[in-house]
Image (cartoon, rainbow over the protein chains, first blue to last red):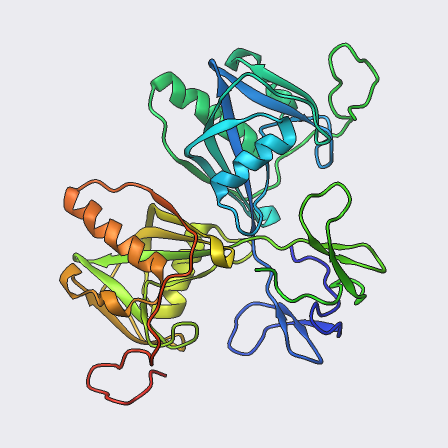
Length: 201
Length: 201
């Protein structure tokens, strides 16, 4: 899971992958200057955006999982809160404006060193637009969710719990550890309806 | 908040701090090879460890905030969940074993690019030991918490809400954004009782 580091980010010297003194895990340590390169899990933050009972989905225009459907989400940036990050990603991927609600799902995605968090959110209008990151967008009822064409296991997990909680009228915080890469059938990404043979851009 | 990066971690080339094409934030980009060094917030995970109503506090034996009291906590590592990380830190800092409970506090510490999370936890025995990271440990009642000698604002926030929730008999999830470095009086760290003038090791 460690990235392929070979040079020191501070002095350019060559790195060794060893256990530093007083530590118990291997780190990339600079041979000349001793600087230790710590690598930690990254946070992906996203939103379940609702408008009149329907949920906003984005068809991915970029890798990974190009052509599959997702909730708006992306890497948390320095200086922003997880909730602000989810709002920003919703704007960047779908040009939709939302009022942010509470944290809804929290998944440790152990096999890729990530934490995926999704917040409940309410769209302030039904407006959305395609963007460089999303080739197609839609507001869907539960019955119309393309479950077989979802981009990520954490999106599936989040939507399943969201609809279940909504039906009960009681929203919780759902936490889970995903320990194994989900099985995914080989093959091309899903086609856009009405555009047979055309790859999503 | 960006760390002082100057060389590419992949090729050793010199970095420029510029907005990459298709992005809207400055990143450290390698001039020769084009590799982009993304820097994202790090997660600190910790535990509120209870034994017969008292809470486990650790006096820090390392910087930052050497000599001040904290809950066991530290940086989340690759391949572990936030809850597992809190249990590991409790063992590393206090040699205490715990049953982990639910997430209790979640603070975006914006001025240092960190997220601090604390979990409720129950000690499985009253055992603890000093460690290289903790010069002194204690189980304290609410009335004996050294509020003026706590190491971090997120520890104070967490303990205040914990005791309030416990008194009400209803534990929630407490989230907050800390936007400014807390004011801290200049001066030496607190002394250990009975050891005047002696610096905590």
